[in-house]
Image 1: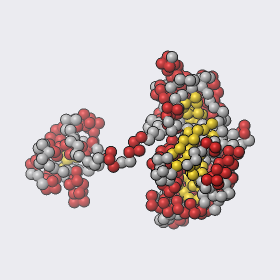
Image 2: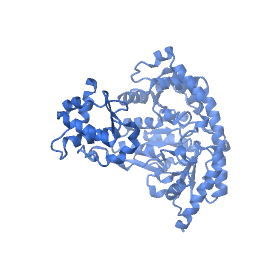
Image 3: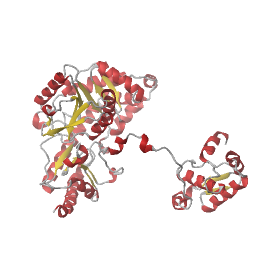
Image 4: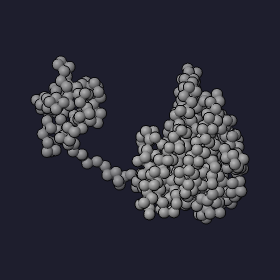
Length: 501
């Protein structure tokens, strides 16, 4: 009990000025600790004598408080053992706890301490229980049936071998697993036409972490940053936390137009492979124009290689090389991720750029998290080196192509008036409803049919510009459910039409 004295002293903070009796304060504290899980299951409470000594009250006060809690069913008294939480009655405790209201103590004024811009950020939202929906057209989530469980288990087991542990268990400071860097350089980047040295690559906790590192390093108040509109909402939010000059650049069927970049910008963020969210592909002419813009302005391009590894656009002759592959001056920073191909929960990505920039990013990353978990880095490195990732890409690509075409065909049958856009690749469809159609209302109506779609408003700098647009992903829904899912979506649309009329 000595080792727990700090715990009980911290829980029980008695006050003669609270307006409550000491016995009531003890009961209130025990109930709150039980409901909040602060008293672990199976752990005895202090004896009446011990608790009385800790909180400086009479032993009889604790005896009466404990007995009252036993009578209410919160505690069980065991002869010669003490008092324990009544675990069998936990589900019924919430209603009883209302009779013992917990008085909130004044705390910090968080509204004055927290960055106010955080409250205004609207991200792509999906229900926490999205897996329970019959038709989850959710972007960026994986299909559990396609996850290479046995291959990943093999690599995780290999990473736990004695020799491997010696390699990754030490503190790497600001460095990364050399095997993973080698695999990124030799297996992943050449497929995008990029050939980089080891000092030009740094590992991140996913693409989003990479964007935050770049924003923290390169952006400051008043420094203008251009980005696509509609575009990746979390990138806009990340940049907005570091600068008040995020400039939206309209997107057309060919992606971002370099000629539309505002004069005061030296940094531009874009998704040239498959534009987020429209899936438009930036043609070679615009890529070259974008590089010319960077050279003329002494600028920097942040290239998020969005959706590129999974699919090839067969109608346009396969994947275009990454913008970074055309860069001869070190003006492009390439943002890559393994989240979309392996698993979103893995949280591993990488940045590729000029060696001097990568060195600065390593210094900054060290202050934030030192380095991503080295055991995960080694497991992923082994997964890549054994060819499992290449095999997974082939399976995923075939599955996604099939699902995307099924979705297009089903939409043409059941919602023919909805514009599917001209993009023929990507893991999602960007849809535009008839004029005046309210896609935000559709999101809620669709959930009533067990369908999840994503509203277009979050992708726009001005949500009012998005009115009739929404996105449907294909990575997480089973192929056999797509037809029924679109049929259910059509029912939701039909219910909204009288309102629109």
